[in-house]
Length: 270
Ligand SMILES: NC(=O)c1ccc[n+]([C@@H]2O[C@H](COP(=O)([O-])OP(=O)(O)OC[C@H]3O[C@@H](n4cnc5c(N)ncnc54)[C@H](OP(=O)(O)O)[C@@H]3O)[C@@H](O)[C@H]2O)c1
Image (cartoon, rainbow, N blue to C red; front, side, top):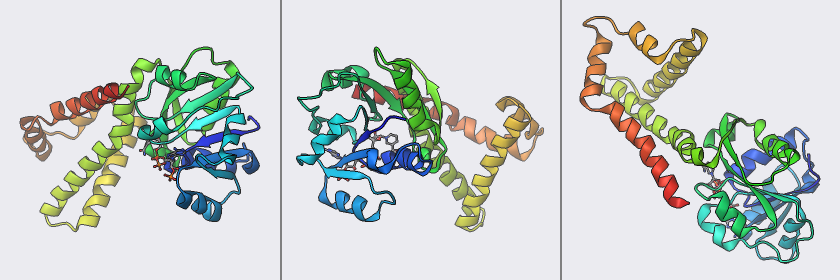
């Protein structure tokens, strides 16, 4: 991989991306240059992070060093983008900036970082346990080496999908908002178990195991979701009784609209 990489904002997601690369020795700690906003985060990384990386506070003189790195991972919250300014004296003009900021377009990135070729990435929170999904949209004139490098950043911890930028909003809705929707469904179903007298923890465990088992069954037997539904729905039985309630409450439509709404909201951020 490249010699030096700069991390602009070393929070939860940047940590989840960079730490496995360090663990696997794909980058060396001395080649990682990161910048954070607060003295508290700076001290925390210096004291507690398991690798001795270079870390600076934003706006310090040393923090300018990050602009010498050919590759930057931009991983601040979108609302903090306004505080990041490309250095005036960037010598190399073939820099790569990989942004994971929700809803910030390639166009906006390119305007803000004119000395960089920009890549927009959407990843999701399961990346923190190595089970992420990552969507990548390439800006203009990205070389094949730069593409390869960008994929390397994410392939240890997630499955990678390449899209044109238009698809990133719906990808984000499904994969980044999805975990919250699934958490809500797990919570609600286990409340159903609670209502039937099961302890909350047991009920939640049963729901999660049931979901994992259902996915395995669909995948291993190559079933469609309709085939699986028919498999467990007998005439006049318990499952059709449950499904009738869900249809009456328009759950299907509510779920469809939740994804459309998340995608539309993402478009508004551009
Ligand atoms: N959380 C998710 O589920 C998720 C999933 C996919 C993508 N994302 C995207 O990933 C990005 C980071 O999210 P996160 O959850 O990792 O956030 P986070 O944990 O809050 O980390 C943000 C980092 O940015 C730093 N920062 C803030 N202002 C800065 C500045 N002016 N200069 C340099 N660093 C600055 C913060 O430093 P301090 O700690 O000192 O303030 C912190 O290290 C967001 O843009 C988000 O859209 C998030």
